[in-house]
Length: 90
Image (tube, rainbow, N blue to C red; front, side):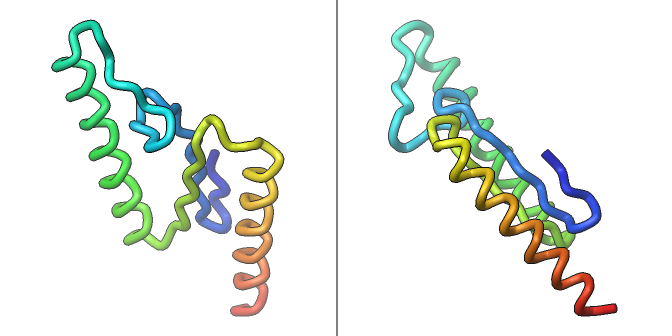
């Protein structure tokens, strides 16, 4: 999700595809290929975070297993805080 006016980018990462430290289980079938794929995804995630942050964005990442209501509250708080900051700088 993107909240363009306040530069907030939200990612919901899948535990398997993004290497969740709690739930990632290395594959049994073709482990070399899939483990490298997940590693590349994680590297791309860090690169994306860095580029967005350098461009003034706030990056919020959540794991798919996190409670959606808790994530929604964190997102709303971040967006509202950034909106308040925009109003304060006018």
